[in-house]
Structures are given as structure tokens and as C-alpha cells.
Amino acid sequence: SAELRAYLFAHPVAHTLSPVIHRAALAAVGMHGSYRPEDVAPQDLAARLLALRAEALNPLTVGANLSLPHKVAALPLLDGLTPAARAIGAVNTLYWEDGQLLGDNTDAPGLQAALRDAGFAPDQASQAVLLGAGGAARAALWVLRDWGIPAQILNRTLGRAEALAEEWATPSWTVEAARPEEVDWSAVRLIINASSAGLDRPEETPLLLSAAQWEALPAGALVYDIVYRPRLTRLRRDAEQHGCRSEGGLGMLAHQAALAFRRWTGAEVSAGVLIEAAQAELGRSA
Ligand code: NDP
Image (cartoon, rainbow, N blue to C red; front, side, top):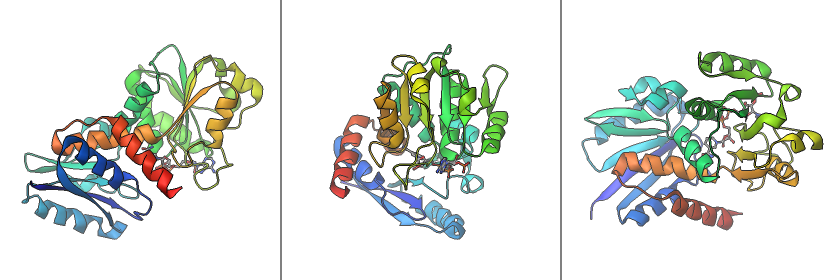
């Protein structure tokens, strides 16, 4: 049968799990196709997207994912954005609709779905703590604002957290920058790590709490670490040692892929199947 084609444009593209995940998605719904990672340097993105538009003449080219450093740079090169992509100011999924090349952000709804899978029930009476103030933090802010959960942003560079809080606050939703000592940990039911601390050095953590602070967290509090490599980060180990639940970022990765796949094919795949494929690949490369 016909071969669908999708791309991943990133720079560099090394170590991506996305081809394995999308191959599993195609297999799960019985479609044939390819998902092709391409290293696209920043100065070549505009030309590559022009070439992608030319390929739209081939109805089987369904779209592309964008990863670092293209998620923001692509915005002015597109014909339109979904509301989530516009709010976040970044796109990770390009797709066609009525001949237009549109940009979506499936990282944010992907995180939201992963938090639900982790048993998190949104509760506007509680407080969330967000670690980090970069691109991934913006996806997390979209989730927290959508749920109406008041949030405090902790970031190594406090000024970046302050700028984000100012940008995202609305009359009906509270978000502020904070230092760890300013947080009432007994009200925090969700901590999301959207920083890249610990990515290169596993012993590094974006949040150093005392035992008393960890133990102040309510029973059932969840630490969601969007980092998925290494599997058990220092942050997750600290949380679990003090009786908190923790979850890694593979669920977010799988859900954002499933949402992109649905944009491209209309087909639904279960995130569980994609998580298994990603885990198997991580196991092979460990
Ligand atoms: P950015 O470079 O935009 O932001 C990085 C953030 O991490 C900044 O807030 C930075 O703080 C903070 N940070 C970096 N190093 C340290 C450190 N040593 N200690 C404390 N804070 C630190 O990155 P992104 O937002 O794009 O990505 C963040 C992470 O999210 C990456 O690990 C990425 O792989 C992951 N990710 C996972 C996804 C998934 O599907 N699971 C999807 C998207 C991203 P400062 O402002 O002080 O520099």
C-alpha cells in the first residue's frame, strides 16, 4: 500500500527516540510509511520548509516534527498556528490543512495527558511548582493555566522566571516567580521539572529540598520530571525517598507523538504502545 512520509527537522538529530516511536505507531494502525530525521542547520530551515511545501503536491507527505533549535524560528514561516502553538510561542508539529502549512504544539497537551496517566487529578485549590523557564516550561505553563492550578516558577536565573510569570499571568490565574524558601510545600500537589538540570550530569538536580520540606508535601504529591534519560533522575530519587510519587518524561514524549500522528493520519494510537517501543529502544542503547 501507499507509503506515508513524515520528517523530523532538528540540529543535531542524534539520539532521538522519535523514529522508533512513529514506526511503532504506523505498525499499531497497520499503515506503511517512513519517519525521517534530518539534520537541518538553523540557517537552512526556511529553505527546507519551502521544499516541504513543494512536497505537499505529494499527498503522502503528511508533515514534520520540529525539535531544537527550530521550534520558535519556524513560527513566521508558517501559514497559521493552533491556539496552543500561538499561546506557547513554539511549534513541534507541522501539518497541512486545506493546502496551508500549519503549526501545532503537541508537547503541551502531551504533558497534560501524561499527567492524567500518572494519576494526577487537577485541583484548583492546590499549588503547582514549575522548575525551569525555557521552552519546555512554556508548555507546562499552558497545562497549568488550562487547568487553572496556581503556579510558582523556580528557576536558576530568577529573572527569567519573573519574566515568564509576568507574561503568562491572567486576571483569573495566578503565577509567580519564587525561591524555594518562599514556597508553602504543604500546599504543593504537583512539581513539574521542565529544566534540563541533570541531563548531562545525573547527580545535578534542579531542586534541593531538606527532608522536612520534602516531608511537608501532601500525601500523593506527584513529581513529574520531563527528562526521561536517565530513567531515574536525582530529583525523582529524592522525591521517592521521601514518600512522593514520581514519573519520568516518556509519557509526555509518547503522547506528543500520538497527537502529531493523529494530526497527520487521523488515526488514534495508544500512548502505552509507544512508551513500550521507546523503553525497548532505551534498553537497547543503555
Ligand atoms: P531550555 O534550554 O529552553 O531551558 C533550560 C532550563 O533549564 C532553563 O530554565 C535553565 O535555567 C535550566 N537549567 C539548565 N541547566 C540547569 C542546572 N544545571 N541547574 C538548574 N537549572 C538548569 O530547554 P528546554 O526547555 O527546551 O528543555 C528542557 C528539558 O526538557 C530538556 O531536558 C528537554 O530534553 C526536555 N524536554 C522533554 C520533552 C518530553 O517530551 N519529555 C519535550 C521537550 C523538552 P536558566 O534559565 O538559569 O539557564
